[in-house]
Length: 514
Image (tube, rainbow, N blue to C red; front, side):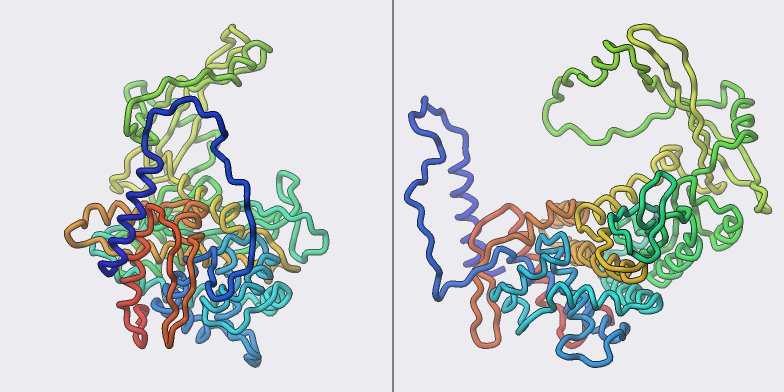
């Protein structure tokens, strides 16, 4: 970032802070929204775009080697007339990064000349062509796309400090992706009556990156195929240089026949286990002294003064109308040794007992307890809270892919093509994560930079769009340069400029994946 840009940003920040600063108002005669004589006209020389961050994402794709990796590893087009595989893939991913929620939104970008110039493109595929590209995929092609992306991912990880490789935490989770279509091949009815598909995701919790996504029919169980994908993710993390690996998942993923094999590889795991009758009996036989109170950490730290909690309107209505009201009074935790039927060794089972009270109106009817169980290998050093919160982050990531990126819309005609779309669209989230991972975190302001890096990495997708993508810019093409001139200030612009500086310093001919 040059001195002129730095000074300009300081002035923009100062002006908006002065404008929004506290002041003592008198009673105003006119409303604040007072604009009246509004006119529109077409600009001739000045050209702008509302998606100023798209240039940054193109830099990420080029500098990481993603474009070359896709074209080298994925072959679904016989001839490139005029697009390559990387053009189609990035066209769908960039649509999501531009705020698009469906394939039809590509048409808006296709008719935006400034957007096309920002990407150095004469044209981009239309929505119909994008859907046709997804339909060209076979299962092996989707696998090749995921492997190509993961090879680039290794290069991004290599840019991280040594502490990054202390432990890889791999989460498995599934979700139902409902569709209202009636002719989509592979769709089926799920356990709750939902028609659609049942995708599986293996993710790296450290960075919230989806490593493997698999589309399955809606009636398939959550754990189906998870062990194979776990093994692939373990191999990927071993190759990256992670010193320890931990697998996590809920009760659907405790596939006991694989536990010994993972334990032999010195891979840790925390899986839920169904509260079967024999295990509940073992828990009930534990001595009272073996139970201890489970103290969960606070969801967040109060930065200012604690606020008074508002009245619980829902609970008041439940009480007034005499509905059953179940309240959590506390949680206790204990552990015992257990050998699953498919295993040759004992494992640690952490038992969480939830103490509940059931009331009707003002009258307490009875107290009861619910039992939740979790596998852990012995000697893992994992806390009880680790077991109890093993799938929180994976659920949050699925929520972002489903309702933020809109990667699970299933917009095309069959199971494999929707799988391809899901993997391609999820690249929007991956590019966001790579941008965060490549941010510098050293130097005079290293501590501040580290905090900002983690904030960007954990941002919700919509927040990231508003902070880094939907930035109004004037586009200027001069000679061999495409200049994005930012027209409005926001608090994340210094981070954006730092990221662009890092990306520009990376060598063009030797992307970081090599």
